[in-house]
Length: 255
Picture 1: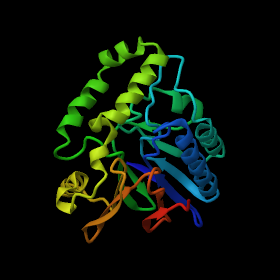
Picture 2: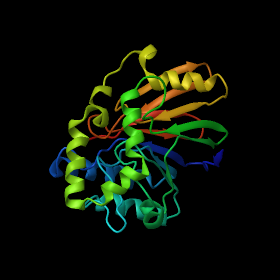
Picture 3: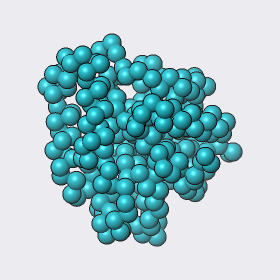
Picture 4: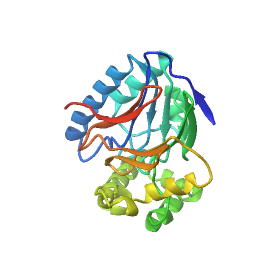
């Protein structure tokens, strides 16, 4: 389990689901500038920053090419890590094709599975959230295809101009990928990430479960000592998580 200490006066920040690039350049640029303003603000007292996936609406790393754009976000993240502030990235279902660019260019470790962190003695279970828990079987089958090395090899041979265009189309149109059906609260008993967290608690203790993916800011008490949080998104809610060394809460960044 990775361990972090939050010094006095510092905080740990969490954000998820920016989907930069969608639905078009103009709207994405407006949201990106807002997100960069948040990064500039929180870096002043950040002990660490966790980005829980779907930063991009589509991302695929060719051997020598990455998708065009997002320079404000990438440059700001590079400046933050250059200051010695650790940033952790969890690949989401829209940007799971990461293969070294963030590590090499930005100094940001990328996780493709949920991770356990101990922060100031509090135990965190952190992940994007896609494909976890019961149900979601259609997406789980699709993810096996997307993460198959042979399928990725064939896609890499498509010219980036065509590959990115095709992927962006399906990213919006295919509901299994876009998550369009996952943006309404289903009730605690039907929230599959809540059910997943409860099952984890049967064998281990965690103070906080922190996920993205659902595009809904949620706080659900699992038992007297454990709480599930969903971070919401930077499309409709502009919400983020903050941990001050003892307490975790979801806040909204003013638009």
